[in-house]
Length: 123
Image 1 (tube, rainbow, N blue to C red):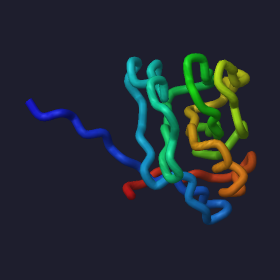
Image 2 (tube, rainbow, N blue to C red; image 1 turned 135 degrees about the vertical axis):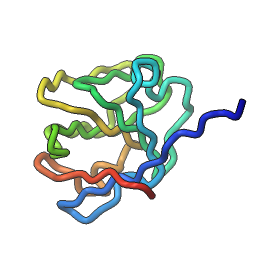
Image 3 (tube, rainbow, N blue to C red; image 1 turned 90 degrees about the horizontal axis):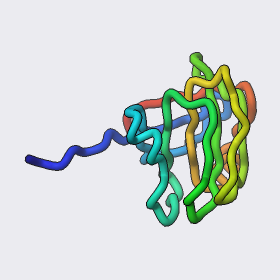
Image 4 (cartoon, rainbow, N blue to C red; image 1 turned 135 degrees about the horizontal axis):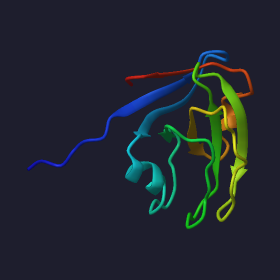
C-alpha cells in the first residue's frame, strides 16, 4: 500500500499581500494535531503547520522556536506570537478556529498583525 502524501498549502496574508508559507501542512486529525511539530529538528523558510481546530499550543519537547498566528472562523488573525521558545505554552484563545505555526521570524517578515485576513490555497 503506498504511503499517504500530505496535502501542501500556501498560506497568504491577504491584508499585507505577503506569503507566510508555500509548503505548509494541515493537521486536522486528533493524532496529527497532538503530534504537531514534535520530532522535527526545524522548520525551513516557507514551511509551516496549520492546526485546526486549535485554541492553544505548546512547544514542550520541541528543539526550536516558532512563530504562531491564531485565526478565527473568518480566517482573521486574532493573536500573534513571535519566537515561542521550546518548553513554553501560548495563551488560550477561545475564539480561535486554528493556528499557523511558522519558522521563528516569519511573523515579523510577513508583517502579520491582529486583524489581518489569511488565505489557505494550493501552492
